[in-house]
Image (cartoon, rainbow, N blue to C red; front, top):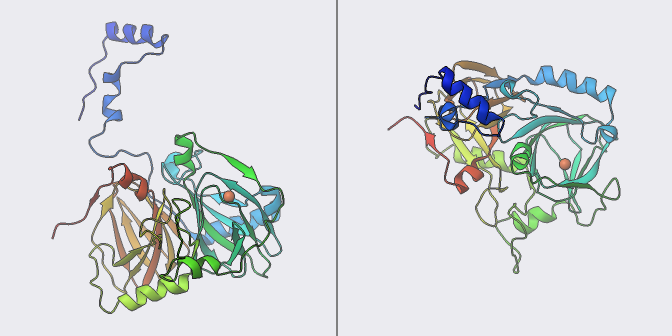
Length: 347
Ligand SMILES: [Fe+2]
């Protein structure tokens, strides 16, 4: 939209002279700074679970969870290699915890979500309460809360980590510290937070202590049941099928200040219309097989595969059988600052 003016010798000489004073001509870069539409270096990408799992298990023989602090293979967007980012604002990785292992307790200002992909019996502890992790569970470790993970079970457990690491780095607002012990003491019974805040009830004197949901675990069994109950009557969205967003039950708002998360059901033979929005979105397939057209690329997917849709890139989902997709994005931040836009087919 903003054409770059021709650079003649006189101009080039001027640019070279001002460069030593840490000055640069705006007109040389204006088109890049103020694009007509979002111009992200992020590209569509898919990680097939079978491939990543083999490498993850190999990493399990190379390094312990204790030594690694967190044994994670980072899903790096091919357009952002070396930046530990799956979109400009979000980090994603697949984490493995083997039977008998502990991932030590720490806290940081980055908010995190866990979406359990494989295995039963591991736990995440947040501020003195442990929750047992089952495939499909959506679990949050809020900003600046101590959290640790352990696997007292007999199977390897793998989950998808989603964090706002790049966003916090952008603001230069990252802090972190270790808990004095490897495992934080258990101070509450399992299910405390869900009973207190997640049963459409609230404590009499409830006042929000943070911008993050007081329910830090959303069991898949409940979420899946909601989708199933709604499929009978809900009109199917032409792009999304039946899509719900995870909510902070105390406010109705997003579960975290920086990350929104969604769960959607696509019925067998669903043939979705293209959709785009400004929040680059990470998808994890929970159930079923299908195909998503993401810009110019078609991804065939099955359970546990992960793929990313960059900002303002069109996506159309197709399901060959009943399918469930989990997804997350930076939508709360974009909405808070008035930037978020979406485009679905008219009518
Ligand atoms: Fe952490």
